[in-house]
Image (tube, rainbow, N blue to C red):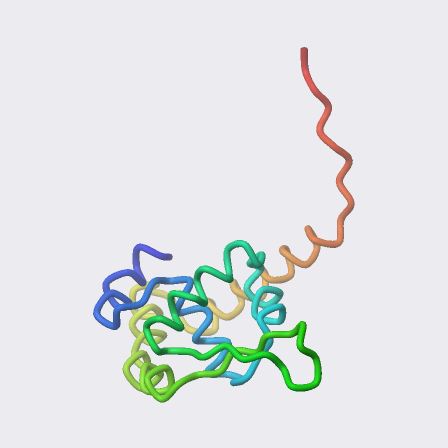
Length: 131
């Protein structure tokens, strides 16, 4: 997937993880860092440097929440909002590259999300060591 996305994102100066963060923010601006991490299954050790690079590129702004100083919220800048227009063709281009109907891609995505939820719920015992 990332190989397919790479040329489209490169022309925008984005990496795949940055694009995922932007997708979250384009859907709902002003999201906490922890909520972004939960949504994208990224830990803070991965997410914090990613957000710092995005802030240095002037796509986002991080602010302490006024009601809870421990929480940091992430907001799109004008440049971050403008990227949405530039990235508008990416989903259609990816769907075309998949060479299958949109309904099939959506079904496959839903099935993968269900699998992920099931795996997260399951308590697996540690694997037995072989000698």
